[in-house]
Length: 278
Image 1: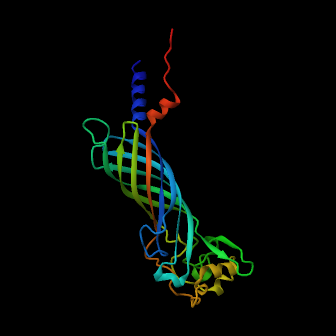
Image 2 (image 1 turned 180 degrees about the horizontal axis):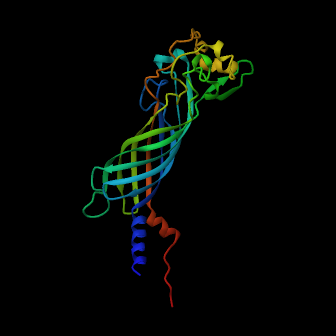
């Protein structure tokens, strides 16, 4: 008969050590179209997560986030006239380590800096703004289907169409503060190391408009691959001219502030205890 109290104790411990969080912040992109600059063109992002605190030092967090990144035309590469934006989603699991014993008792600190690292998946879809000179209409064009660097052509067999879902490694640092045993606030800055150089659809060399016009993307692919001529004094690039830097993959950053509430408190709200009066 001791099984029921034992299970009840384990269930209570799980609820007390679990948190649900909502977060809001900003994403930015690091890659070929911003000269590897941090904090370039921050854009709104938001997410949610679940955290389990094993003890006062270690936690595990599973979370998801959604935002968008963009880049283009820094001074050093303005003549390329390339730009993009992409909505990004991510899902990850990570371990967190507190520098101080963190909690809400007399022997624990109510704030601590922390580090985190983990693994996850991210999705993206780079687009660029295109204006039809004949009609004057403007639209955002998906770049991957256009194979702007000759992906999938016989002349560039080593270049295959890139996947829009990639593995990424999230890591970063933050600080947390507990108002009480039920409510926590977090502020953090993190980097997402991806394994693709095509977050911005730019990586290797120009392949020339003549080749692209023979592909499924046709004239649109040729125009979106090389936009140098749209700049005053600019001219189209011959095949083989450097378009990006394929020695480094593209990364993005995610900074946010989050509020975390104990699952024990949430369950108490949803299922309040009632007294049976006889």
